[in-house]
Structure formats: C-alpha cells, structure tokens
Amino acid sequence: MPRRSAFSSRLAVAAVLALALVGCGSGPDDASGEPVATGVGPQPGPSGELAPASPPAPTSGPATPEATGPTAGPTVEPTATPTASRTAGPRPTATPSVSAAQWLRRARTAAEAAGSYQVRGDTDVGGSQVSISLSVAWDRAQGSVTIDGRKSKLTRIGDTVYLKPDPEFLPLLDIDKSKAKSLEKKWVSAPLGDERLPTVLALMDPETSLSVRSPRIAGQQDVRARPTIVISGDDASSSLFVALSGKPLPQAIAPPGAQTPVTVYNYGTKGVTAEAPKGSKVVRLSSL
Image (cartoon, rainbow, N blue to C red):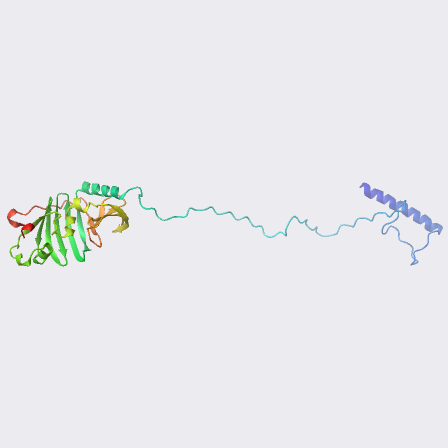
C-alpha cells in the first residue's frame, strides 16, 4: 500500500540515524538510564516531525454488524387492511314498487282464476265469538256460521243469501223468538248486504270480501308459515292477507270489525254444489 511503504522507509532511516548517534556517544541516555527503545511509538522523521502512529490492529473476534436502523426484532408482516364488507340493512319491503291497489287487483284476478275456495276459522267480530266454515264460488256458496254459540246453515245463490237458523239464532236477524215455531224447517232469505244480516256473512261473496275500499299496505304477516302482505282499507272493508310468493292468492281474510283473520285455502275446490231452496220453504226476512 503506498502510504504504508513510505511510513516504513521513514522508520528505517530513523533507525540508522539513531544507531549512528548511539555509536558515537553523542546521544544522551533516557532519564531512566535505559536505552531509548526504537521503533515504539511515534518517531521523528527526517524533518523532525513525528511520524503518524500505526493504525490499531484489528480486534480479533466476530465483527460487530453495522447498525442499519433500530434494533432488529422479530420480523412482523404488515397487517392487511380488511376489506369493508357490505353491512346487511333491514330487509326491504317486498316489491315496494307494487301499490296496495295493484296487490288487490292481482289477488282478485288470481282468486277468480281459481274459481272457488274454502274459508274456515274462528274470530272475534264486534265482541262476538264467530266460527265459520264455507265453500265459496263466484256465483254461489254454502256452509254454516256460529255466533256466540248460536248456529245457522248458509246458502248463497247469486245476490241472495238463505239462512236456516236455529231458534237461538233468530234474534241475531232481529226476528222475535215467538216466530221460531212458524219458521221450523224454513229458510230465511235476504239480499246480500242486508243490514239485518251479520256482517261476517260477507265472506260468502268474493266480490264483497275481496273488495277493499281505500286500500293501503298495512304490513306483512305469516299465515300458516307463509309470508303475506296485508291490504287493509276503511272500517267497512275486509283486510286481505295476500301471498308474497307464488300466485298472489289471499291466504286469509279479516271481515269488517274482526280482530283476527280466518283462513282461506283449498283453491279450485269442486265441492260448491249449493242450490236455491224451494219456494215454499223460503220466507223473506223483510216480511218478518
């Protein structure tokens, strides 16, 4: 190495001069009386300047790694930022673009296409306990109704309702019990919608029971584990529970004033065979 060679040459010259001086006795001893050691520590060069000291020998042992940053610890992989997930919001109202009037129209069309159905159930209407069982077609119906334990057979042909009431049922038609004897084995007839008829008898007529005035969507409710949308109207209207899946057929009907609906089922039944009673066996309600 160039710098090391020059340094060694200077040391050699200094050594020769020192020996010459010692040999001539012209150089004083060190104050300790011992000869001055040569080649140890910085020595003067030819110009009288001290030669630079030799660089320190490298320390034995493993080299200390050069620090390149903070004290190294366990390698930690950066945590990935989680992808934002879509938060499930409330379940949207089924087919919100369909209005109550459209639901009502679809229900009536589906029921009319089916041709017939059955109605059965118990409910509270105006504080009276009602149990009803009907087979209903568009032009006729048949069955029975029990109101607060008082029963009557029922038939509808067109717009006329025929009742064959038990004696206890007569007061519900505003008929005096004293006439019970004369009405044995008789049918009492009245036009559909007569004010003297119990309102629940509207269930005998699809045109009436499937009509809702001022319809509005009142919510959703399961009927026999099937989701339905509830179409309600004014106080004089029924409430329809229309299936949300499959054909939009009414699954239940709450007649006017009812606290709970009655079930509508068995669409397309062929058992509606009602016939009008014979003339001699019929008494008009208006005459009683």
